[in-house]
Image 1 (cartoon, rainbow, N blue to C red):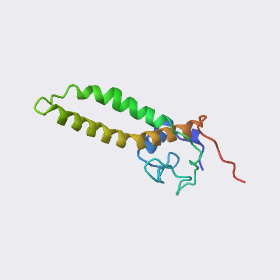
Image 2: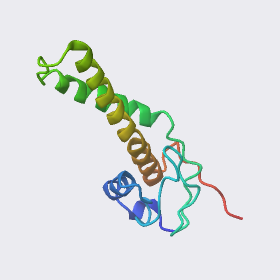
Image 3: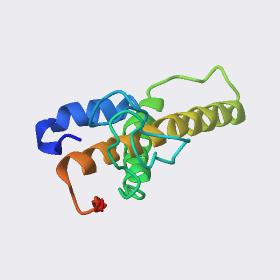
Image 4: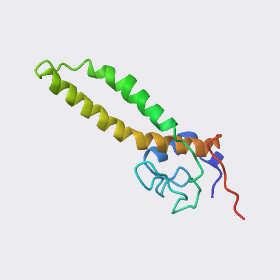
Amino acid sequence: MREPTEISLKTAARRALLGRCPCCGQGKLMRGYLKQVENCSVCGESFGQIRADDAAPWLTIILVGHIFLPLAFLVNVDWMPTWAAMAMWAACFAALALAILPRAKALFIGILWQTRAPGYKPVELV
């Protein structure tokens, strides 16, 4: 296992965004939609103890609610009935949030792993 200081924050974050182990870049980081693996299947690095629970929804809300929503006001949908436009935007933003959420969690797991921040609790191997 490599030390996190050997891997740059940028590299760890990019690997995590791609759903890969921030340490080796080969193993999967997530085993489900929002559940991270306990250990990397390739390098054995431990991720089960990292808690990024509240950070991912926060980042998702920031991206969807504060960046993409204002852009929706720039799109002219006057050709649609109001109810259809509201339904379209609701579906669009729900899908966008569902797509961003697991990537945001993976990003924070990668950052917490690389920096050994307070969300990271190393497991002592005996």
